[in-house]
Image (cartoon, rainbow, N blue to C red; front, side, top):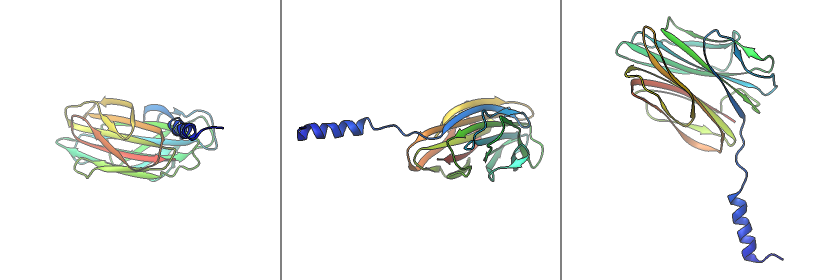
Length: 224
């Protein structure tokens, strides 16, 4: 028979070695140009595709993101914002769609006018029953700090872009960086895309995007 102190010790070890949170499987598919064909892996009834966009314009007023399309069809309403300073501006957006068939799709980002550079990033989630974000936030320079509500066994995604001043790599708070690069043309931007999975529930997961640009913006979603 186990003594009381042995039972207490067993309980302590049980808590210490409790199974880790296992959320949806997130796969980063890469960064592309709008209109490229993107491989999204094997067809699955629970495959959600996440599409993020970042664009820069050679004027201080940012373009409006009109739509993010998946093979020409809309997904969720994009979470989007933009900001400008000096002679350039950036616009970011994030949307998702349940795509159960096929192994590839064509992402399209449409804006209210011409942009100097436009990049899109793609992730897939499997083990996800719906394409509806649990929470969605957008932020730009000058806004109050933002947090994200995360359900248990959740995952999160972010797109951030900056312009004006010196270009520099982003530090993303709330997700891990999957890709971070500068893009040139008539105006230049730094754009970063990040994700994280296997999250325990958080009522207010801190979000931030910081680098050496004068102005920056981000959009973020969570799923579970």
